[in-house]
Image (cartoon, rainbow, N blue to C red):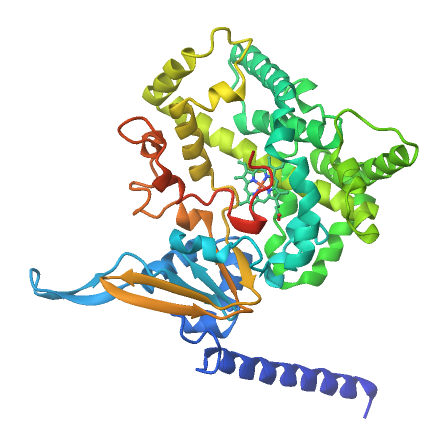
Length: 481
Ligand code: HEM
């Protein structure tokens, strides 16, 4: 018998053993012995990752919509209607569903502070989720609670309200530049894509603040290149990375292939993989030579922090910087685009906002400070509504309570319900699901800033509590201010 027979036999045996192992694993996952066995949800999702794979990888990023349906399906209860003399489905939606063998999804905002806890309550990020990020060494992509905390502290100082307040004059200069360019363009008859304009603006603002030098996208003629499309392109394989983490190695090859990529993707890859690591080295050199700057860059702040020496290694700091660019630019520019779209298509809302702004803006070329603007109720409401309908991170973001079980108590269909989410298992929420909870946001697809204000034109704290745009707790957005 030849060696190819033995090789085929060996491969088939290994495949068989693997399939039997997977079968037993699936049986255990749906058995009463599994710690999540008490949580409602489809059996196939409890047994395997196949439904998530199908909706997120094959149908590309559709599992969130499917999760919305699961909340509806597993919240329905049959009740007899005496009026209609028939059985009907009642109950709005089930608050807790099992969406894969090791993860639970929640649609009840009242439970958010338990999931995304603060203080000493430890919350890891699930490895399955982090696998999707090519920035494993950034705080954003850190699994372990304690390590994440250490990495977050210096960034938290860098993005504090006081530090951001010092940035205000620079932002005003950029806003003026943006407005001048938009006004100049509005004279032309040609339509243009406002999301590109905002992407240029947010990239310039964040790079100027974080790296001491702006990318300069607003200075170029027109709006291209910018990082909007390239960011979408490099985020596309996220779901494949999640299921096949070894494919992430391909992300590191980018810098060797820049000469063969489309111009804008090459620019982003060069910035993230070549320019940012070089900036770290320069910041280190400057620091060693005793050179300091009026306003520190993100790298100088991290290098001067109490982080472990290994955590100050150039590639990790470059990952941290790339995470800030990734997390901050497209979220913010998309929120601005959503707001712009709704204001331009609803002149009555634009009129109301303009009237309010006119009470404080005497000269459009000399805008009042944020301390004045933040007191305008309708402006605040427009921003909140834009954040709600732009979702920020629309897909789910989960946490693992590593040292405590979480107890969900609620009342559904006038009956008390209770679930225990055992420690070590992931539980998450999605802005897309939460922001369309009709109990908190009636007619949730309608852009309606008034929902954020009460009859006295004051902010409605109860509605604000239902918002998940910046996530919550110890890993919430650092750029919120
Ligand atoms: C409309 C604007 C923004 C929205 C809606 C938003 C939303 C979010 C959300 C939902 C998270 C949590 C993600 C998770 O749980 O995995 C997050 C994290 C983060 N955001 Fe933002 N973000 C915005 C702007 C910014 C800006 C301007 C910056 C910085 C310049 C920034 C930096 C970060 C960082 C560094 C993290 C990771 C925090 C950590 O893991 O400790 N974000 N953001």
